Length: 109
Image 1 (cartoon, rainbow, N blue to C red):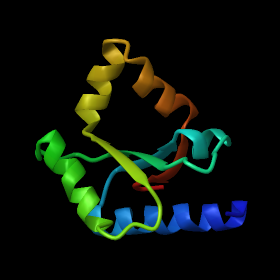
Image 2 (spheres, one colour):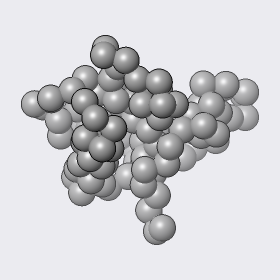
Image 3 (cartoon, rainbow, N blue to C red):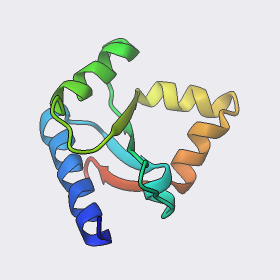
Image 4 (tube, one colour):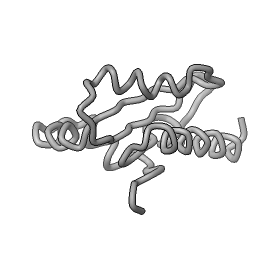
């Protein structure tokens, strides 16, 4: 798939998440964000949403938006409080996503 096709597909996915899930922030991470995708790469999205819904249920809600998938996708959905707590305990995975991931959407911007 060409780079412009990939960017267009990522933008379509982002727009659907924004429209149907209404998050505060969406960050692309993983091989597509780092510019190193290979034929088996999936799209990895880190979503921040202020909600009381339990963790697994949040992922299910986003998964349902994409019941038919052309490409493999993974979603992590954290609340702002979870992100803050993960950073406080030194979670390098979350820190790496926030530092090096590609911000696709931020509410109010």
